[in-house]
Image (cartoon, rainbow, N blue to C red; front, side, top):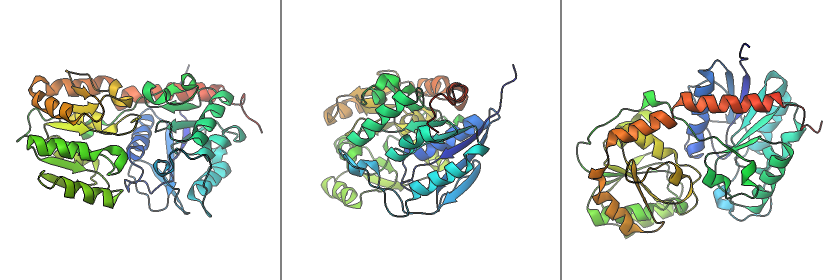
Length: 365
């Protein structure tokens, strides 16, 4: 039977323009998903807030008020939708243009797209990028997964387990474009890296303390989301050699990341996945991470990095001293086998085939 090529509408996160870094790892995930599926012959259009940029495929920009990030609403039991909401406007566009597509792919960690699922004429696939944060999202994830089986996917089993009825969620992993990452067998000089949004839940202070204790330079990559938090770290760890490298393109990031001895990942919350981990592996860089969330399903302890107890900075420091036990090529081999765009594209394609084939069974209108 001849494989059908799908027309897909991707709806980006409403918390910031695509390419700004405000959306965190979701921005890379969306664009890599587009690449993976386009390589298989599918057509993709991306809808994102005004000011977005991408060189991957057709982009439709939507004006409106940016949505507040879910991380600032932890524990919320109510929905906040600002006037002239960009989220509302993006989904109005999706409703009006849905008949041009076979499936819509939602990347917003928000209540509204989940609620709308059974009211659309086309199936909607949802990528839930973070773990459980609020009762209102938990309830809607549970309701939607019951009403529309297989419509919701998460990165890892650890992420799924934070939701009630997590067994109903699809585990999809992720993929990156390995052609964009150069393997570095040995860095020019010892140093550590930290990659992510600079915000309290990411735990940068633990990496700074480890760097200060070991005496190794710490290269920090990512958007400064909380300026006061960043200033506190610089003040508290004034003896540490911390270099802020900025929010970089993939090409720039991999060049600098590949020259580091290890990537420290120190989240204070349940990290749903950890894009930076597989990006580091692609460069041959081992990962030293806290043993919680999705990172426990990525890092192979003693082979591609080390897992230590959350908050145990002494454990981070000890792991740094054991880096000579890690073969950097093994890190690259793991990402090639498990996280290539080809592997991920196969999983996404099979998921979409399943949703499209069952289209109509869960519609309300």
